Length: 473
Image 1 (cartoon, one colour):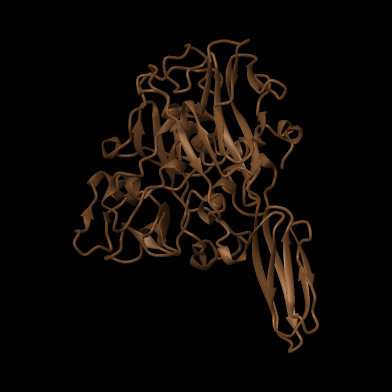
Image 2 (image 1 turned 180 degrees about the horizontal axis):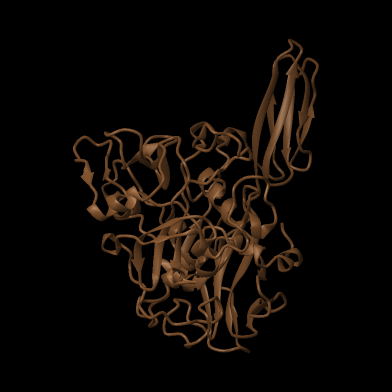
């Protein structure tokens, strides 16, 4: 696991944890007008993600025996995960013993020259597989000097979570007492790290406010609206929906530091904007066959998976300069003006659906939060099917023949025409066919501006920003 000593040295970069996730949890804890409401508890049950069948699953300390005809030799790829005993000879016996949770690879060969590789899932039931996030995943302190317990209860497994604060000047965690201590006014994230039953490293993120309302409303006036200042918006943030559509203003390079962007929706004092041009997600920018080089193939279609290709490319674009890990792909400049006005949002938690799902027109609307941050995972995001169909498209089509194609609002059509499109734009909603992501299509009169799905498209990041970004420089 990571050590927080290193984390504190790179605090700004480590806002790349999913701040949007904890902010979405905090939204459960407060009403829209900033007054307190019943705090929600969220049960979390982890699952095995390796896809290895139970036949090849071994608990730590247990041994599985296999008979392999003409067995010659066998090897364990990682002896710390699983040890291997092979009798060989005429007994044809192979025994695997689980040592530590994780995926172990075993290779064995026969005297007939056949080589086989088998993946075993080693489990450790003493590790966590289920927990409860209480109080909406937040801790609210009235003032410095107070102490509270972490709002997480382990349901299955041993509580071996290691808690650390991303900003110990705001809150600290006392290992001896197990309490979180409020140090000074501000907002930060408490991170809990642990290894689950299947050997996967996990993070739990708890949003903590000291003297600052965590919904961004009814806070102390003043400040610049950045985390910890608690500036009260002039207009309340409400549930985003089709009514948030606007005939978007354009931002130029002087206003963004990243070329042109198009405004497509508003919520309170915040605007949803989309990059006019796609980002180049390959290192060789000399390539001119854009469809081949800058439109990645969909390797999976689950946007909420930490390793989702679309999510990773957008997070890289937004964070590479801040994290100092730029490798030649296109990224947002460290001093880009966009960073001064970007706010956190709920997009990661509402990828939305597409295709057959009748809710696809309404289940993917993201919402801004009143906290500015210039870095972090899931601050920049891809539009959802709902957002594209309502704010930035010509029409929406379904694979269900019983449902008619939906024409978009004329303002959404006008917004779409402001984008720079070659063929398709990826959406964060998964398609209804395996390996398909939602897309806005381009290329001929039939597909022009249509929200549908594909396994290949370009990437146009979206952001929620404070509307002050439109003011003259």
